[in-house]
Amino acid sequence: MNQVLQGFRLSWDLRNSPDVSVPGDMFSIVGVAPGEYPIDGWKPYFLEIPADGLKADIVGRISHAFGVVVPSAIWNRRRIVTLPRYSRDWYLDMAQLATVVRGWSSTTIPDDIPCLAVALRSSWHYGEDRLAQSVAVLMIWNDSVCRLLRLDWSEGPLEDCITPEWCIQGSGLLSLSGALGEMESLHRENPGEKASFSLFVLPSCLGKNLRGRRRDAGYSSWKQEWSYVDHRDIRSDLRELLSQISRLFASEGVFDWKT
Image 1: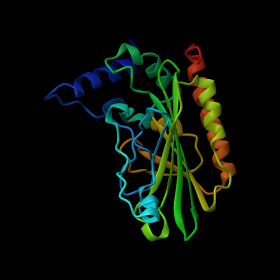
Image 2 (image 1 turned 90 degrees about the vertical axis):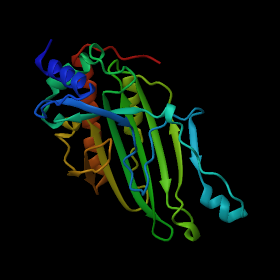
Image 3 (image 1 turned 135 degrees about the vertical axis):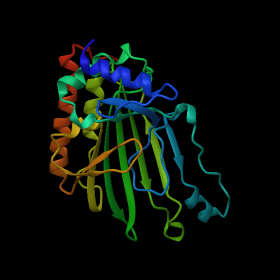
Image 4 (image 1 turned 30 degrees about the vertical axis):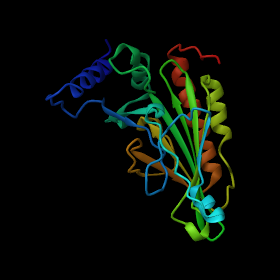
């Protein structure tokens, strides 16, 4: 077994065994966690696959318009996608990452956990300088099957700014080529006033060639953020990032799964 994959598998097995300490100098998965959208909000929004393809919460607007109490949407934990938490993934090159993708199913990592993920966030202001955000998350499994989830979020009406309104849309299973094309099409050049854009990648080594301003992200699922103010720069980087992922799977002879 390749040395990179061997260390990856060993560290996963040991870290998920009780009372075992593993050195932190090797690339590994240090755990898994419920996936979250990288959104600026005071509470987490999970990567839930809506049972009917759509899930929304507009409690604040309804309560003020009609004076009725409407229960907030409840997360279905069984439908939340789990994401891996990598360690020292920045130091992988593409050949090593390809080895991990190819050998994913030969490890003890559950097959329902995606190995790669990309998040695209647009932020802008509207109305009385209220914040709106749209986040698209592309998740890719080792056999090239993909899903897309999208969260549209906005601060609530002026009289209830602390109650955000949000809507999640989920795709069915997608082929790699179909998902990459769909992800690229979701970038909005001019969503609104004071627009800014961000990219997030998992594992972080996928972002080595991104030209945005890199900083620690502070989200449980995403270590780093690349931020942009010019929509042309992020469009160019997004296109190259998605092409890089396509080449990664092509180099390993993974046939594009067909819907």
